[in-house]
Image 1: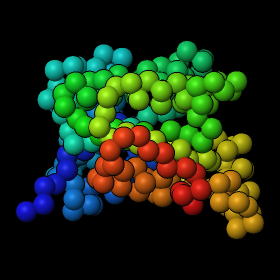
Image 2: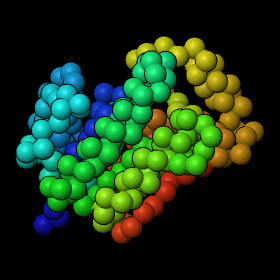
Image 3: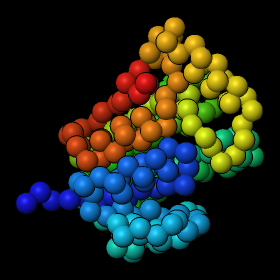
Image 4: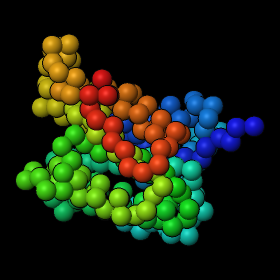
Length: 213
């Protein structure tokens, strides 16, 4: 009988994370999902959503042991309010989760990163994403996947005027653009993350934006 997977999903209340959660709960290959959150999620027979403070994670929690971690944690400079606060959410939290899950025997980590992730980038956002990827590579995961979307299409809880205008423009002009510049729909990104978690490949792998259209 096929063994079903236990997934640890962090960032389940965000745009991409919500789609990952929906897909995972509907997937027959998934036995259970643990989604540590700051606010409660709707109940589901396959879902456990312990409420946590990401600044004070509990190392002894049994749910750190899973078949795979999917991390969709992230914020914006506007919401974070400072570079230090942005780095805490987009770098420190995902890395802390990775270290605890790996220490408990979890073999696979899948990150929703970003196109342009580069530890040497002169752009702060891209540099933080690249530094996180580098740090994760040092953690020793048997399977490590970076999904790097470009602009993400979907309805966010918070209103972002500039992003919404750009999304509309890309949605209209998408067929005329090279694949790597097109809008990446949130469900497509979520499916790539879930696939990488349920079908882990040894070593480090990158899913580029052109594969997410």
